[in-house]
Every structure is written in C-alpha cells, then in structure tokens.
Image (cartoon, rainbow, N blue to C red; front, side, top):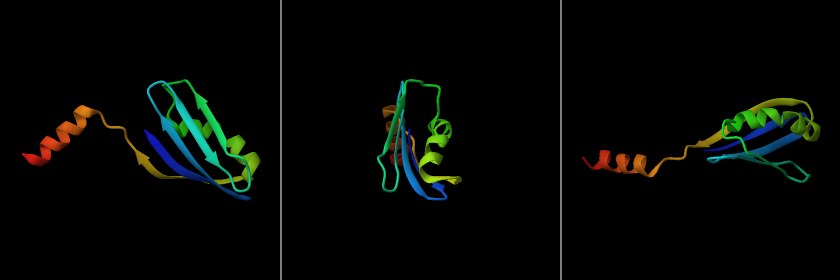
Length: 92
C-alpha cells in the first residue's frame, strides 16, 4: 500500500509518502527548506497513517503547530490473482 499526502503547519507544508510492504512501513517526508525525514520500522501490524501520527511531533518541530493532515492518494497493492479476476470479469 502506498499513501501520499501532506501535513499543514503554521510555518509550512510537509509532503509525505508512506509505503507499507510485507514486513515494514517506510515514510519519507519533504519539508520546505530542510532535509527530508526518512523513517522505517519493521512492524507489519502498523498502518501507514498510524506511522504518520506517531511522527507528528517531528513534523511539528519543523513546520510549527499542526493545522491538518490530508491524504491525497492511496494505492492498494493488488495480487496477481486479483488482477486476473479483474481482467476475466471485463472480458466475460
């Protein structure tokens, strides 16, 4: 699963991308005029937005008081079997 969005703070906007794979969750956040934040955790039970929530204090240090968190795009990972079923459903 891939989640893209932004965190809006009083001093700016940070864009983030969180990738959940089988055994880990990885976050990359880009801040205005600062180094990006890269964070990864080996915890398959953690959801992408939960990781963003846990790291909100780090966002707040860089962009000021948090005014909102917005999800702009979510891409679900589909299995090969799911893709085959989808293709067969369209042809019959």
